[in-house]
Length: 283
Image (tube, rainbow, N blue to C red; front, side, top):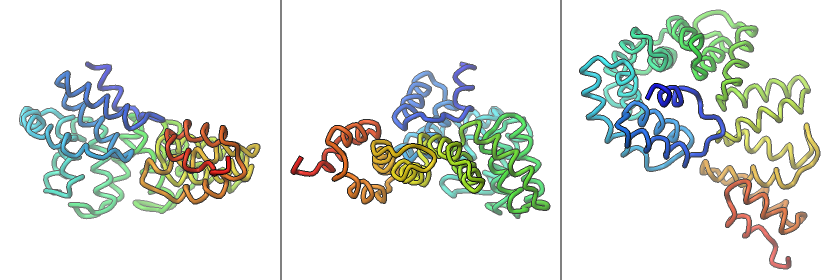
């Protein structure tokens, strides 16, 4: 059971939504409400639909665990309340109690609420203390949030050294938003190959803007050789996030590709039926 808990605490970089939901279902079948809820939240962040009801079904069990003083249950129940926008004052209290018990998710999410003034008065100084505590315990999202606050000067003076430090740390842990921002920073420095690598890492974890950027770079040969298959792959993959902007770009590319290339792009994207529609009728 302890090993299962550690699994969900690490960001599941590159894992599909189907795999995330399966992990949640497996945890639920074992009676592991904490693991199930956190895996479902991982899936929800990746764009999975239909998981809200499954999360809601965990609430009665979480309430019992909260009554028994379980810190992980407090953080997860508070996350449910925050996600619903329901009883935010209680969410703040539960996150605070979880944070006091050393639960990194409680530290991170209370820091989020304090940074943005959600259900509580804004206090970015205290938020940064919480983010740092969680980041030093290995939480990637807390590290990214801390980097963002350093960049904007929230809770203190702007500090680009600390911004870069925590951004790299979060990206190394696979946080897609951090990977995409790091890609942007490297592109500004002209380090195009490294930049593309980080965009692709973000894309593999469902970051739609990174998918679009990676696709255009493969199309245009920026930081790599021109690769039409990879370009169309990532244009089509954007559909997983409900974003059809890449389809228009893929349509433009299709006449210059062979049917086998288009089908391979569709296979890599998990969008074989959409790829078939791109193949010109003359081919």
